[in-house]
Length: 236
Image (tube, rainbow, N blue to C red; front, top):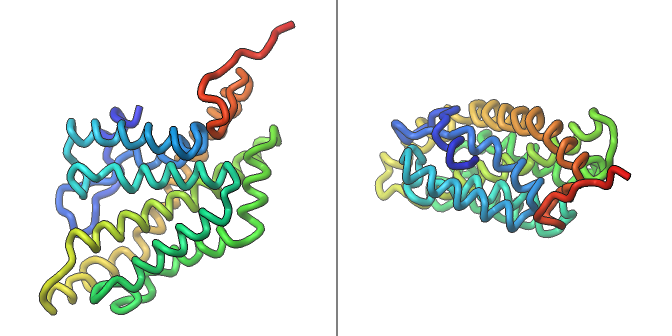
């Protein structure tokens, strides 16, 4: 599925002409939630890498699968209640992004970080634990949507942070003019673009994921990677 969806473009990558974020990105948090952090990460990595070989549309060459893979890892960790690990990973990567030497948005345009900080607040708040509870229980449609939505939201933002750090590493400038490029062409224009992008990814994952999770549970599939195979419930 990841391989097929890698060919469906959603948004252009700012600063990387001809490169696109694909529909596979929107499915990554859902795959991690359903399959668990490790199997989900492996599935997204393999599918994403094969997709890049076929389409070659990712911004990071053969490593273009990494942001989606880390997104799947993060959603799986959240669903499995790995709260301390999740909070540490998000905070550490956000600090690296913000204070990256010379070109980090904390130096050039701090306003860029507003939505990522919102994600950190959600991750550290009771909303996260409530979302985990709702995602685990066979609750109402609204509660399951809330759980899947919050998990997908923070995971999508984590994937965006990872992608931004990779962008910093791979395109690190060597001249003052290139540093100015980061402020004017990268950080400023995307300050309000990536929140829209990540919100749409969250909506796609939630709208797709809620009925899928309910259907899988109806057939006895253990969400979150505790079991790797579906088992039919007894009809007796």
